[in-house]
Length: 464
Image 1 (cartoon, one colour):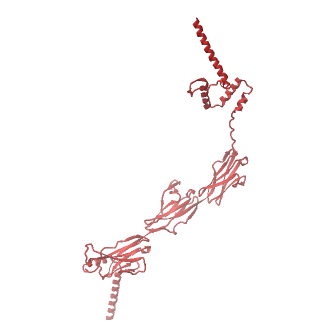
Image 2 (cartoon, rainbow, N blue to C red):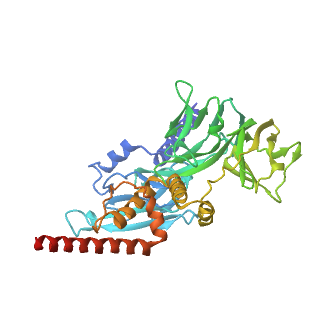
Image 3 (cartoon, one colour):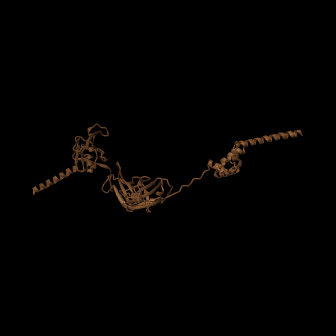
């Protein structure tokens, strides 16, 4: 019976010592503070303050400071709480990872006392090139009896990253009129914000209240829901994820909308004069891309000679095909067909080319015509004919300038020309223009005869 009691006491003592040792490793903040400030232990070291939590981005460095008063001959150790790994003891680093480093720094108390008992020592735990696995709490521990310790925690910020799982592939294909969902799953710390935008434009086309497509500047969320997809929504979409840690990341998702081809021409009738260049234009909408042909009388037209075919793509789903005919001939008149074929179907559009006759220019009377008109006619008939032809050919501007000439040359001696002078049909204009010297001589004789008559009349009256 006495032996049984001794064995029971031994077991209880062993269990108590085990629990006491475990308590030396486990962090108990209330007990630590009480031990640090226990007045019955005046020579025991104490913590000058708590350890501030540290937040740093991945790849950077985190530093945890632990300041102790009256350290004396005691040592400071650092332990990672999560896996109970001992990192350092005093000046020596125990762990084999070069990313962990411990430094000791002596600091005097606030009262600047030179007493060794009042000195403060700061032990700093440096964690370089932070990893996500370094997130957690670390214990600053003193080898006192009882053991003193306090905790400091490190939070590691992680830049955003787009995950393959839960994210749409690089290309999504749907039929026109079906619904489409684009997904983008992102990770990071803090949780990233995800928003969508078009690659070429800053807005996204989405269905509105009345089932019409409206422009939306910004769409947030990990999923972009598109209902009854339209061909105008085809294109590349960017999923952008970002948080407080740069850089932001993005992924490109291309939405392809499949629909059968359509072909249209702006004018079904195209008229042009012969010997001119003609352009036949056909607008084709389809996806996947189509094989486009121009035919006439069931014969395919190829580029060459007087024919030239050119295609340019306006959108991923829209193409313009142009057939140019150089120096249009009679044989080129008729019906032309523009056709587009793809795996989704075939479409055609026709137009007809016809001839437009050129307008004949008005005939002009030349100097030879004037001579022909005047031949075999009397002077009066000639002048009358010439005036009639001149009057028919003249415009108001020509009549105005002709009136100025007649007025300034034959009807007044003033050097100022009246712009409002009417056009005067003078039969003697052309006649006198043909014989200018005869008219001048006649005028001179008439004036001299008048002067002689006046002198004779004055002489006769004087004799009476």
